[in-house]
Image (tube, rainbow, N blue to C red; front, side, top):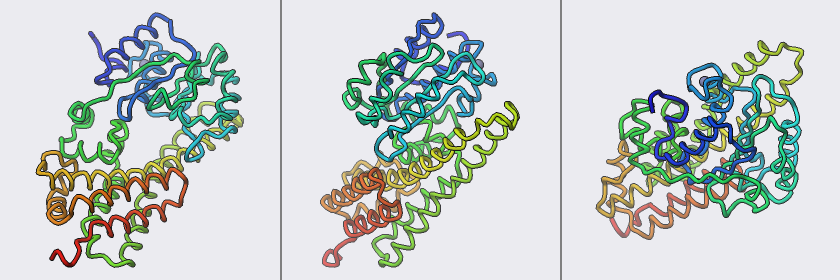
Length: 380
Ligand SMILES: [Zn+2]
């Protein structure tokens, strides 16, 4: 490679990169892709890179206005969707996507749709989308993302070109984080743990002081849980939820900038702001769910750290800044208690995916972890 371009960020995916790069330069891209790979393998980044390669005049330079806006998520002809229901895509959402594919591109020659969590298409939503997947308008490229091919409805998978992503090792992820944000290995590991190993999310996390503060608050709560009473736990859950909502202001500022940009570009009469405003609302609720997911991730990684320390492998601790508290907890929590606490975390994940109120899910998780890890008096 002689120059840097938009594909450079995809570490550990040489085969995928050379395939997509080749098809975009040779003009042999297809209309529907299914990117399959574990969390953190770079599917979203690859989808955006492919969008840049197809829309940028230099084939994805990574630095022009088109590439920059695609990467930032504000280019009008690249749309990113994820399930609007907590667990599945809604039929209405599929219809909205189809309707949108029939409109002309706003700015470029193509419109690109990135549909995250393609496994969340239930049969009804998938049926609505099938015809578009099979024969999208000529100026449309659909890129569906999923963690496993088996989990996607066969009617969807069979209509897409499947591109498989390899898992990225933790050490590669840490090295990439360091290269991108200059962050040290300890902070990189903590951010990856909070973000479920997804590198772009971890990079976002690093750049958000309010999200880092929410993590710090939760680590403090986990440390203090054994000595908290019921009212303290409820108060802690409330505070954590407030801290999860704080980063939404960061999202709102970006959204307002996008709306202003759109109005400047199209004029106020365009009447096309409604879909953007709707997308912004969805983004806000997705961002809130992600923030709550982060809390659950941090709790899960803290418990893994306690288990690793108890098993005599403190070098595996991801939350290095809490290593002392983790060691203290490891000295008194037994295997069975840890297993029960880990169950509390999975249960919280399940509750959140079923749209249980976040407040209730976090309260229940803290109470369950507290019950599991508090050292019985007879041990003292
Ligand atoms: Zn470019």
